[in-house]
Figure (cartoon, one colour):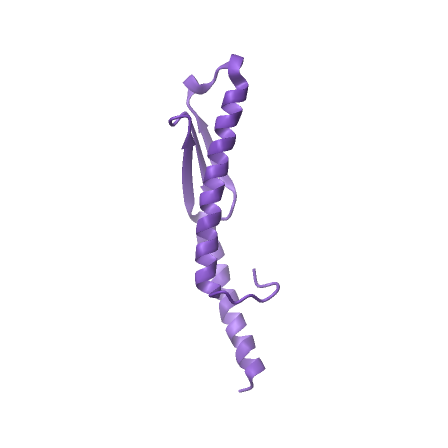
Length: 103
């Protein structure tokens, strides 16, 4: 078999593995909190926020800016964790092999 044929087969197998990892990442979640647990954000490892939970005692109409900061902090932490897991898992599959359009 030619080198091109082997490369095409390898790319097809890798594409199947990438799709399987992407599906697994879509169902895997990470959690981050801020404000001592006043705000909790759950994100899926495909980069989508799944939920935001706010303890009632964290809601102070006189200090909405603080709550906004807590939500932003927890969301960014969760998304950062999700991205790190996603990158690690995808690198395992591709082993640094990069074909345009593969991911």
